[in-house]
Image (tube, rainbow, N blue to C red; front, side, top):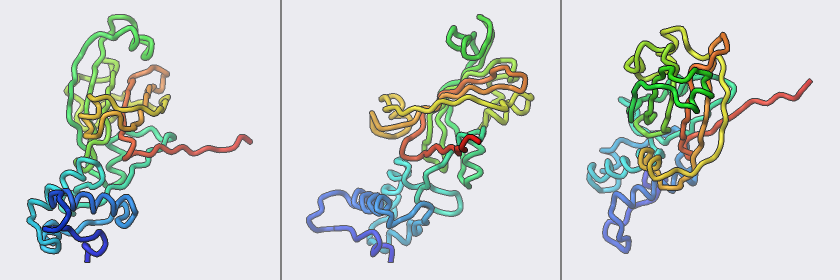
Length: 247
């Protein structure tokens, strides 16, 4: 039985925490101790409610909290699963959407802002654009299976897109449609502590550990076309790189 794996709840004994909190804690500890492994499927909410003798509303509330924490993911038509950490290769230039789809996860974006403006002095240096050149700016939260994974800020040279509205789920898909998808990029990774703003957007504690990826994408002719700052949850992402010895 599932309760034998994660432990039973204390419905009327010495445990004073609400039942949904008890279930959350039991599931969280089972995940942390590897009793529940990445991609393990949880029983249906109805079955968990019957086994623990609690309401489905209580089960749903407990699972909702763990989905927000990024420990669980919901897959439409399949159920609830233990979240697997995402491995992102530094050697492959791919979009967030492509990364998630390749792992069987459902990507989604929530727009914070998108607008058109003139390049700033810093953007002018980074993108190699003349002062006054128009650019598009995008800010969005990136989700996988309903869980927030990253906050992303991107500036794109205006010649590369037809409008800011041309970007849907994937920026790189929109750039490819105009023939301006980057073919190479320079990336820098560093550890950060989330500010109150980023913590609220990602549903994590303030000063939680995160990863900042700064990327500059280039076209075949050498022109820089996009610059992106992505703040990733440190508990959900691993970045890997393949290294070869010099011959």
